[in-house]
Length: 264
Image (cartoon, rainbow, N blue to C red):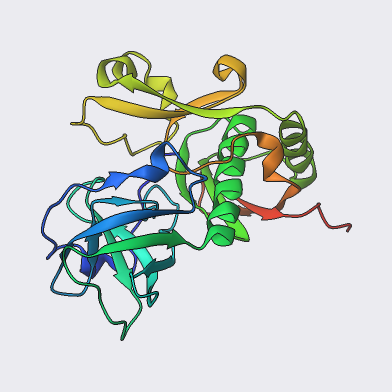
């Protein structure tokens, strides 16, 4: 789900960062909780750049990972969030205020807050499922641990939270596989309906686009997305629509929450 949003309060960490490439392990290994890495650079604001990382950087509505960098002596460097610098491959780990920083060239163990990440993976996957049920242009989205949202260009939904919750549950319980594949930028241009965002296109220049697919042979859904997701829809667990809000003449916001739909 490729949707851009206003930068968060940590955006100031990126502009002064030295451009460096970080191997984003989370793209192909979203269940990897930790990995050894080398400290390549520390910018003027204390932002830490590693040669490889399991930390997802804020993008596409999904917040950056939190966790810690463990130094060789066992001392932790708490990471408050993770952001991108000048490209999606320039990943900056933002330490908590007052943290003692590692040295450039030091080897650390990058370890995410796995419980938080897994909740975000489940929620992000649920957002994709919602876009299947509501096949309308997406005008915004935000993934959160407990209350996520997807905004649709939809004058009058005609939907009820009960109906959408039921259809979400059916997709979850069907236990569809969730996987990624890559296509060329030319293939995306030839299949514009893969992009569900109304006003934002996936970034180009790398020569290829990452698709997140659901169902055997992507029979349920396929759309560009750089986020992290669970391996099967069943892992999403109990999910429901908390409310459907009117946000303008042609905009409806669907709020997704964990757990069964509460009884009225």
